[in-house]
Structures are given as C-alpha cells and as structure tokens.
Length: 413
Image (cartoon, rainbow, N blue to C red):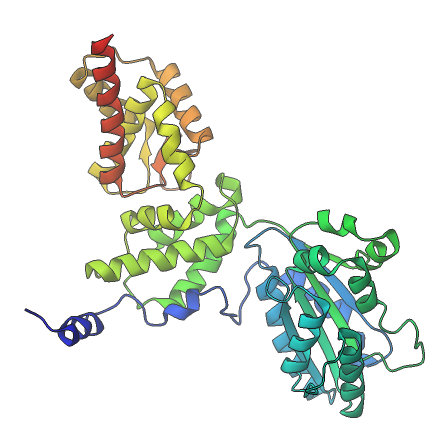
C-alpha cells in the first residue's frame, strides 16, 4: 500500500505539458494584446494630457464590452505601461485598479484606493468622503497623479447609487483652480446600467466611450497561439488544437467571442492531458474541457431528450465519424455514409440528403454540433461537421441510451 507521501510525490514527479500554467490565468497581463491595439491608442490619446500638461484636466474613459472581450486586461496593460512612460518623462503617476464586484460601496472603494496608494487610514472611523479628502491631500503633498480604474462598474452603480457616482466624477467641480490629479477609467459590460443614473451624470460618463467587440475565431487564434507559446512546452500542443478552440468560441462561428472562456478551455484541456499522463493536448481533451468550462452545457444535454429520432441518428453518425477519424471536423458526406449504416442497424429508412442537411442545421441551431462551409485545405466546397462537447465516447453512450429508450417505449405502445 502506498503512503500519502508516495501518492503526492508520484503526482509531483509526473511530466507536464505546461511550462508556465499561470500564463493562461485570467489575472495574467501579457505584454502583447493582439487585436486591442486600437483601444490602446484611444486610451493613450485620451490620457496624453497627463504627460504633456499634467494636472490641467481630470480625464475619464468608459470601456464597454461583453465578458471576455479584453476590457480588463487592456486597462491593466495600459496602466502598467503608461505609468512607466510617465515616470520616464518626470511625471509621478500611479495606477489603481478597483474591482467593484468585490468593493461595491463608496467606503470600500476608498479603502481599496488608499491601500493601493499606501495611504494610511486613521483608526478612528472616517466617512467615505473624509477618506477621499485624505487621499486627495496625500497625493497633492506627494506630487503624484493617479489613474483609477473601476472594473465591473455596473455593481457600483447598483449598490452605491447615483450620488456616489456623481461625487466621484465631479471631484474637481467645486475646486476649479485645484491641480487635477485623479483620472478615471470605468469598465462596464453594456450601457444599460448607466440609464439608472441621472441624465447629467450619465452624459458626463459617456463622453469618451471605447467599445470592445467579441473576438472572431481568427482573432482568438492569434491570442491563444501567443499564450500557448508562453504556457506550454514546445511540441505539446498543435495548431489544430488551438484553431479548434478558437473556432468553437469565435463569434463569427457561432460562439461568444469570449477570450476568457477560450483560455479556460485551453487551460482545462492541458490539465486533462496532465492527469492522463499524455504528452500532447488533443482535440478530445478540448471537447471534454468545453463541457467543464461552458456553463450552458447542461442545457445542450437536456435538449437531446427532445430531438426527433433521425436527428439523434444523424448526431450519432457525426460522433462515430469524428471518433473514427480523430479529427475536429468531418465532411457531411462522411456523416451521411455513417448515418446510412446506422439506419440499417436500427431498421430505419434513411432520409434524403436535403432532409439530412436540414437536420444538421437544426442541430447547429441548438448548439449541439458545429457546421460550416469548408475553406482552405479542402478540395471543393463541402459542409464540415464537428461536435463541441465531449468526451465523444460518453456522448455516444448518452445518444444511444436515448435512442434505445425510444424503441423500448414504442414497443410498449
């Protein structure tokens, strides 16, 4: 019998596909931000007066975009690099990043700003407004300027309310001659919550809006390829695997365009490879990772119960064709051949090509399969079919179980 230490050591000594797993974590801020160059340029243009005429204006920017569109990492990267460039030019600049999902009240936000700026907070209880006054006094005495990012600003609006937002953004209104040392970046998923503010506050916030669109598959490929280079040992993950993750998440291929989800899938796929002692990350690892990372996967599994019989047979055919070839996609013709054999197994009359194509499109609409027109690397045009969820073996068992149950119920009637 192995001791606990033996078991732990066996895991620690097992080789890994990762050389730096943390490069796939959401909090990692890479030096390169593919396809967010335009947003960085907009931020640099807005905050340029901080370097050319510091203290002349209090600047603010509003970053708007869905989950995983690069808002947070762009703000952090900008803050890190802009601070360095400012200091080279003799401007003492600090960058503060506040997560409003955690710090939702004005008081908690002030505490966090003071902590990051290394400003001591007196033991006696201070109001949020008094604490802010101390912060303004401290940075003035130290002759420093600050960019404060309010990440997930939606939560702050919901909890703190209009008065707290107004208090922040109108910092220098009462003191027009005061050196304007504090600048703001606000990050929100959409403009909806801004409608909860009064018109004056809302109009002040939306003057400098920078939009972040969901990523396409080609954009995600560039992001994932760069991160994979940093995170995985050479030869442990192929371009086909990276492209597959980019395809199932890319907004142009029916995905959410969420880079955070794509990175999580890549991370989980690598962890699954490590657990098995595999030397390479495979497409099957990605399918299984997608099941763990995608929160709506349960809905997809539930929808299998309500599929018409021949759609289930088509799905079974796609699973078997993909399992046989070991690839991310197969041609619709290969699926049809498999489908005809399955129909013989179940003594069913196979449907014609037009009907099969309609079944495929229906399965695609439900998010169960992926179907697209072939591109580079394929002779002629054909519909390519893939299955996002996995493992394929478990999915095949599930589909077969539902089909067999249908036949048992039909015999009883």
